[in-house]
Amino acid sequence: MTTTIEEPEVRATLPRLNEPAPAFDAVTTHGALKLADFEGSWLILFSHPADFTPVCTTEFIAFAEIYPELQKRGTELLGLSIDGLSAHIAWVRNIEEKAGVKIQFPIIADLDRKVAAAYGMVQPGESTTEASRCVFVIDPKGILRAMIYYPLSTGRNMDEIVRLIDALQTADEHNVATPANWHPGDKVLIGAPRTTEQAEERVGEKGLECIDWYLCKKSL
Ligand code: BEZ
Image (cartoon, rainbow, N blue to C red; front, top):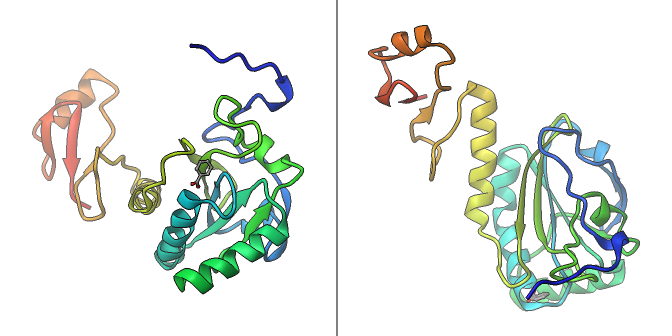
């Protein structure tokens, strides 16, 4: 069965990779914050459907657990849902009281949905009133570098979020790419040759582990 979305105003417009992340000026649990406040840091902007819901609560506890690891990587966290400030404040207090976990990062209260709309967080096929489980990785220059969209029913994998930051930072620092299931310490991929001459040179190049001329790994 196909779903017809009638309301064009709630149709999701997605931002694009490697373009400036949409600017915002938001009300948060840590006061007013804008995208420019995060310039110079990596930023993970993530959305959740609603406060005081089961999957979201497990995710918040898990985000709080990886926050120190992210900070070691120069990365800040910023949550968002289409809930008000009072709900956010009550929820983080409840998480601390019931689960003993302090939520140290800010959460946007996006009641007017301005940030959610700019980032295509509301996916009307799923819900017209809640944001989906989105993750946006924004680099220190404000460029959107990665997006992950998860459905309402699936809690996100925090190891993957930390791994994604490690992979992006490694790619930037060493001008390489990372293979499937890469983790820090594993070999990285070097770019495929662009000419037949480069392909010839690549075969037999010292320090490389090649499956063939187009797929070569090296240690960092
Ligand atoms: C949850 O966090 O449990 C949830 C929130 C919205 C829709 C479905 C599940």
